[in-house]
Length: 441
Image (cartoon, rainbow, N blue to C red; front, top):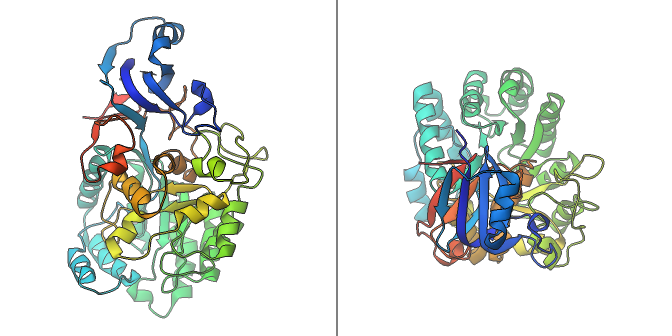
């Protein structure tokens, strides 16, 4: 059921859709309306704007009284968070590894294999329960759209099971058979890539929207990564890439070359990487969800608008740099230089990378706080990156903003402004969440 719900008394409404609410996108790309109201109907945003215009707006679009009225009492509202990078299909945890790392042992990707062993041994019911638990945890913190990757099976059967279970809860499923080379293929990485590009992809593609690869030293070479990504694209999957987490390499430029929707981590970037990411948006710029604040206010070269789905007139779009500050927080590694990317004109998203090894958090508010405190993003940039930026990283035009017609994914904060997300880290500031127009229990 999608009741018509009118939210009144909003002290600060972040829409990420300035033109839809009569805000100049140059002055405020995030489209903030103060003393606002918001109408949800049929699982969509039906109207948004100043409360003084609410009565006429509701009458025009609804033609009757709303089913429910919620009083925000001066609190802030933001779009539901879009977490475009998670690894939620797994069993067990790696608390001992975390404790050892905090005692001084550096993070290495090889720890993934311990989760692989636990996931292979787990039943469907165990994996399904863990997935549901983490999604509920995320929803209570304001996340309404989640991407979920496989990558802890690394056999045809377990990878297929992982994407199938993920598909039960989200359309944003990513096949990540090329996460690491499993122990049974040690010294035979090319043979494993053959498997990934062959039987494993054939089994997983029907349940997946995306293909991904961990293009890093110790995981997959640029040549192997290209094989995986091109095979996935040939099977009809969109492209995503893990790159630049452990050191600089060729993964970022490979992602841009192949038209990836996003390249994730981006902790270690060369000047050429930054130029490639910014250049992928030349003659284009996100429209739905507003224009990235860093792109307009910091001198980026992208124009302010494109087609409503965020693409160029020829249907193509750029590559989003998805930053994962929870990883650096959990591994004591240097944070990505978000300011460098934004000032160059790149599009930045924030995501949790929730996984049991390097970032065991599902909290997008924490990611916003870390981005502001540790990565020199403004609050506006960080909130945009965690909402509209994530939507662009998934090439979605229906989430990440609150323009009329958008999916009714709404977060009511227990705070007078979105600034409190960074100002009060660790405090439970989510007062209420609507997902697809339905209030989350």
